[in-house]
Length: 527
Image 1: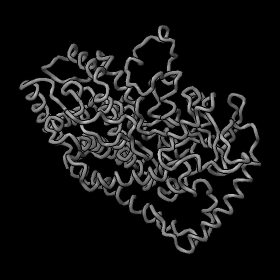
Image 2 (image 1 turned 180 degrees about the vertical axis):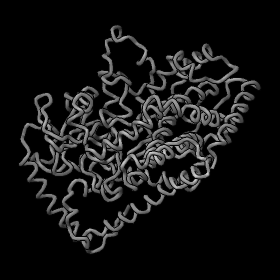
Image 3 (image 1 turned 90 degrees about the vertical axis):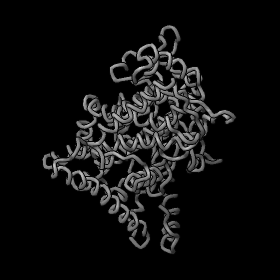
Image 4 (image 1 turned 60 degrees about the horizontal axis):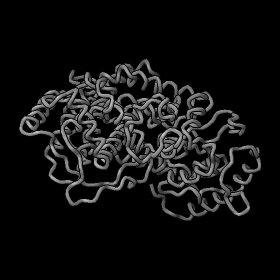
């Protein structure tokens, strides 16, 4: 959100620079000298590292800096408190998983956490009772056993997606069908309704809101987050407060309008099962405010659409650029499933190579490329002989962590075999997290919807592999596996594909029949 450069804003900016410089110099002298080492900020060794962390694709520069520090972490300064940037999978697990009691809070997010969401959004809440209450609500709705309840809607939407791929009219623009799958399945889980077009108004409103949150959530991007004391300046010097309050009210009204639709259907006896319906039924017992309620219901939708679609687009990119992997997965599907039906959830345990494809997809090109929202320490801690002071920001660069040479030799090669090989034979140690990757985060702040998301990704991957050979169109250059967008969530830049049906008339009839069967079952979720 752009703020006009009025005289009060200009004066506030000048004061910001003066006060910020004084605060920064005070911090550099106030903090002890035994912090983790980091790059020099200037010729004299002190100053601000903002110029070292670019606003666009900061993970790339942080990855390069991290190579200079063998311990896998280093310190940068983008404000009066240090940021510990982690490039090692082991260090991330040691701090955020094994010492989660010290590293489960958040830095202070003035813009996204206070101005934009009123201090009620779980994503930005510091560790405390309010966060624990909200986490408990999400856990009850999204834990592994409950995630199985959402499998039917995900499978039906996957069958619809296959029918979309069957009728691709152009080699470009196929991503919109994956986005539709993601939006529709997540909306059904969150609100008990579905969509057949991502261009419908309320879906676009959600996408817009998530883009705005992403822009405010990058490290060092917001001067107010680096220097929160600026909030105490008089309102005439901070006109942005009014702008953000208006945006927060608009957002709250939007989320509540979606919840009101569910409430109306409940009164009519037509509401399909959903997270919002469950929340409305238990509202009196939960002790949450209207704003918390709105943000909780919207959180599932907002967080799930972009991440799921980005992961599936990365899968397609991997198949187009690694045809041998695609062929091996399809050979396994042919042995286990055969040509006359589609894969089911019961087949999953008999498809180890395909399951490894899912893991490698989440590892190869993570959507939350900077590890999601940064963590913060709540007490002083000593790690590997270095002090990490209370209040430090902990930024885990997933781009670097998923390229950690200790666990992932040749990291840009899409190689599912990594997850099937014996540690004793390869000499490569087991990844410090059970999943084999860190796509969903760490510790107590790990994504509460990870089980639902992984199931959605899995069902689509199995169906697309079973029905189609994905490749580059004849004459088209192979897509660039490094061409990814900027932002809090990153996805592959658009590229053309050819989706060739694996079979003749019988396979086509199978896809078409399953589409119609899914459509009939999905009528319970229609608006």
